[in-house]
Each structure stands twice: as C-alpha cells, then as structure tokens.
Image 1 (cartoon, one colour):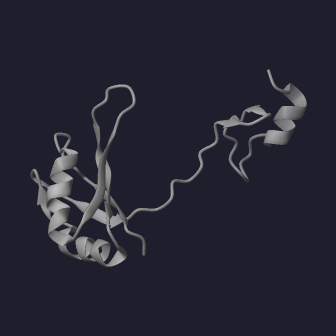
Image 2 (cartoon, rainbow, N blue to C red; image 1 turned 90 degrees about the vertical axis):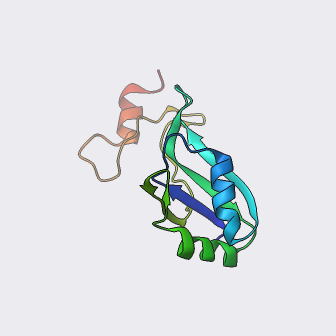
Length: 117
C-alpha cells in the first residue's frame, strides 16, 4: 500500500486546510490537495492527501472512511496512478482516441487514409 490517499465526496466548500486538520489525527500529513475545475476554478469534489508513511495511511482509511465532513460521508481509499488518456501523441499529431477492439477504424488505418492534417 502507498501513502497517498484519494478523498472523494468532499463538499465543494472544503479547503485543503480542512483535509490537513482532519487527517492529522491519524499521523503526519505531508500534503493535501483539492482538485479544481480548470475553467471555473471551483472544487470538483475530490482531493488527495499524502501521509508520512503507509501505516498512517492505512490508519486514516480505517478511521476516516465514511466519516462526515460538512454533512457528506467521505470516501477514502488508496490513490492509484492516473491512466493515460489519448490526446496528442508526439510526432503523430492528434490521436483521435480510438478504442482498442472497437468497430471504428484503427488508428493506423486512419493515419493511412488521412495522415496528419
């Protein structure tokens, strides 16, 4: 298990300081981050907390998962690496987000037919 935690179902008014205060009851908080919408700069309702070690992270999950903050029950779990999501592929232009095994033309067929425009 890692020491970085996902914190979901946050109230939109929650602050990073609120997360730090809450999680400090389980150990040393290295960092806390609430994720904001790129355009509106408002909370997206989730964030991440990094604890000093795995033992403290496990304690935080056990102790705080389901606990209410601002009237909402928090969902706390181990954070996982973000999956890569298509987009720009170096030296190949725009990827077009083709799904593997889909009925759409494959990326190579698309490149053959249309190239990089």
